[in-house]
Amino acid sequence: MTAALEVKGLNRSFGALRVTRDVDLSLEKGARHALIGPNGAGKTTLVNLITGVLKPSSGSVLLNGDDITGWSQAERARRGLARTFQINQLFRGLTVLENLCMTIGERDGNCNNMWRSAGAKRAVIDEALDRLEALRLVDDALKLVRELPYGRQRLVEIAMALAQKPRVLLLDEPAAGVPSSETHLILDVVAALDPDIAVLIIEHDMDVVFRFAREISVLVQGAVFTKGTPDEIRRNEKVREVYLGQEHHHG
Image (cartoon, rainbow, N blue to C red):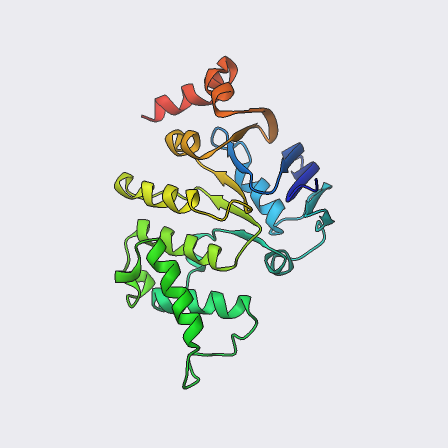
C-alpha cells in the first residue's frame, strides 16, 4: 500500500552543521504518529523539510507516492498536505469567521475577495461555522483573532488546517501555550478526525503524545533514535535517559 507520506534519507545541513541526518519516516493512510525529542533535536527543521519551507541537502519526500521534494509549499498544500501554521500567519486583524472562510474559499478556488461581493457564499459560511462548532469556537466567530487568548488562537489555527481537507496533517506542537483545561479540546478534535487522514504530531507534552499516538519516532540530534508503540517508547530506558529525564528537569 502506498504510504500517505514518506520521507527517505532526508539530510539538511546549515553550513557545517547537520541538523537532519538520514531521516526515514513513513505514515500510512490514517496514521497517528508522534515525533518527539529533546529541544534542538531538529523536529521543526524536519517539518519544514516535509512542508517545503526548506529544501533538503539530499533525500526525498513523497506524498501518496508522488515525489514532491521539489514542490513549493502551496503546491504541497493543494495536494493535501496541511500543517498548523505558526501563529503569526493568522490574519490577526480579521475575525475568526473571516479567517476560516478565506481558507475554505482558497481551497475551493473561489477566493476572489468574496467579502466584497454582496452574497458571501452561504455554503462557505455554513461550513466555517460547523468547523468552529467542532472546536467550541462559535462564540468567538465574530471576534478579531488578535483579541483571543493564545490557546484559542491555536484552536483557530487547527480549524484552518482542517478546513483545507488534508490527506496528511502536521500538527506542530498544537498544545503549546494552550491552558491545560483546553488541551482536551485539541485531543478531542484530533480523535474525531476522518480516520483516513494521516496525522503527524510534534509535541512536548507527553500526556498528549501518549493519548494520541499509535506510533512514536524519537528524534535526537537530527536522526531517528528509535521508534515504536507508546508502550515500547515508555519502557525504553535509553529514551528515558535522553528525553523523559530531561523533561522532568523542566518541571
